[in-house]
Amino acid sequence: MKTLKNLTLPFRILLAVITAYVLSWLMPRRGLYLDPQAGDDNTLNHYVNKWDDDIKMVFQQKTSRLEQTVTADYSVIGYAKSFDTLGQADMQPVETRNEDIRPLNLAAGRRWIDLSDFDWPDYIDSFDKLKVLEDPTNKYVQAGTAAANRRKDKTIIDAALGSARNTTGFGANIVTTMVALPDTQTILHGGTNISIAKLRAAKEILDTVEAGTEEGEERTFVYTANQLNVLLDDNKLTSHDWNNVKALVDGSVDYYLGFNWKRVQSLPKDAGGVRTNLIYVKSAVGLAVGEDVSTDVSQRKDKRGMPWQVYIKMSLGAVRGQDIGVVAIQCQE
Image (spheres, rainbow, N blue to C red):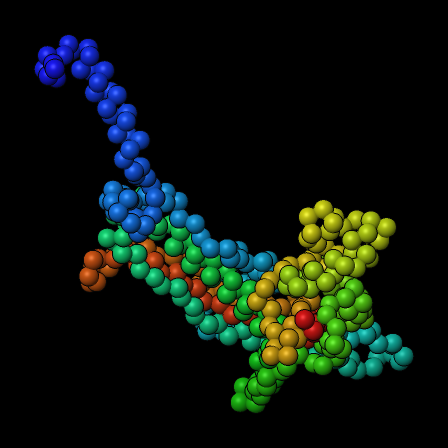
């Protein structure tokens, strides 16, 4: 019998190819990208890591939806800013000649926006930055900025529904009181969720006192996804026979009943499941910004591994300046 050495070169090459083909079917197949924890068949995978080339941020509200709907001042220096209002008076009939002038003494109101400081700090380990394809710093900055914008909305909501610091008098006679939203400005839930009837009632409250009825005065309705879902069942909102809102097309409403609609999920909800929605006139709520969102990214050489610190801060506050320009709508969810 001839040995392998005695075989011709072409025959030996053919035999090697056939042998390799047979062995490839007899031996267990090994997957290169299977789970490294699955067992011995994936031994190679213990040395292979595929890093994501794009860091995804979790779903969240990233922009402030209410900042542009209130009266804002971005040049505040100090710890507080006043929100001043001037009352109204009717014209008086002139009944006699040469009578002394009697001033009307218009009622003036002064409430205060107290600024609060907020920050958002986090570290990015230098060793971790070496192990990922994309520099994560930018996504950290985006996450911190999104948190700041949500805080702006919460500050506005808390101020509109909460107590406002009010002062009267001058000098040593200044009297400070905390003024809650009057009961007359609240539509009770009555065991029901939101409805077109409640929105119309809120509109009547504002119209009666001429709050936001002048041209250019904006009114904003702040609600959550739950209230929109309920309202989409009302054909007065969705039917073209009643209005031109394209609610059935994309399931959203931007403007209806004279209100700009803004969905914010952080509206307060009590233990009984009563959510408070909010309607206000732009000039009735004030926002004061001492420092807008400020971002700093720097390396901390005093820390082990010299991590990068992402630091975001801002200083702001808000107040309900005119009670009659704000309406709270209770909704039983």
